[in-house]
Image (cartoon, rainbow, N blue to C red; front, side, top):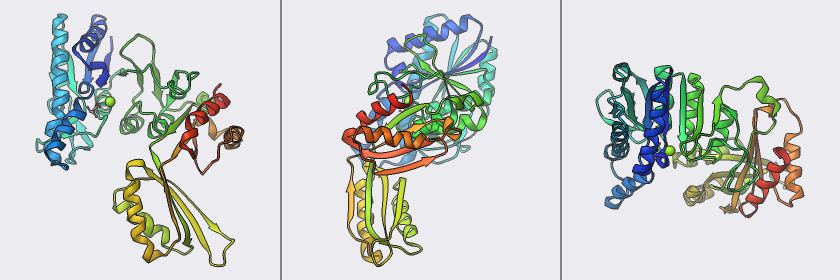
Length: 405
Ligand code: ASP
Ligand code: MG
């Protein structure tokens, strides 16, 4: 008998058939005597559709009202899930984020959880109920409805698991777990039995959108061990937990490709203090996220100058170009080259800390495929390269074969 937090994503509750399927799974655990807290997302497509409706009325809707609107998605699913459990004869009560005691700050559409007082949840569990909690939402101390950012139901589940000291936290989704690469691109990709928080974070931020990154950060901070698994079968999933010594025996845990990046290069930037600061201050002020930055001094010209390249999210490329064009007269650099025909390929693994030659092997593999490397960046557990978008999938297959087999 255990206290279990389960989270079901949008596709897992995408229609009433799927919701009944969730109820049946919950019923199985309930029959064993487990105490269950079930967090659900909005039915798939619902959140996007609500956003679309608001934007049909005006392009930048008020964020407080957006939160009131978006929270209805999850409110629909909690009630339907409770009803589906009632249909199976199981006592279940649905709670909104506020009713569940989830208190957030007041930053609408991306609020942070400040604390959770799960008194009501405990009460209902003690009375023998399954408790269904709306993911993605909370309430400020003043009683304003808030949401936790896209994909925020993951965060609700992890935070509840921490607050309730749950024995088990299961994140149910439409894939069997975390893979060594996207199985749609790399047929030989394998499901991982376990992965460390840091590896999971790198893979999530690299475009392997299994879970909301913030929720993984939260899990790491509070030591919440969780499992990512499918709601469509009974296969065991991937356990996400603190790094263990034996995880280091594997050099590369996963390969990912991010096709949502674009690259800007400034040629012949004057090499003096304060220039990079001015460029990236302006980019930051325009709320543009920068990922990789590469700069090197050119020694070939008389005046010291550097070429400076950086990457941004694809949708921000035009905005970035505009900012850079605006700086050109004051700073005085040469040509500006912008392209969105790039992809970022990364290999991730905690084993890199104790193995040498990893970057060399990656570059060699790409060279063998005739793939040019445009940018390189590394961290303790990751090597990323920017390459031609058209060659991204080919590169991913070759790199996966070289490191993972
Ligand atoms: N329904 C919200 C979204 O689509 C939250 C979630 O699914 O986790 O982003
Ligand atoms: Mg989701």
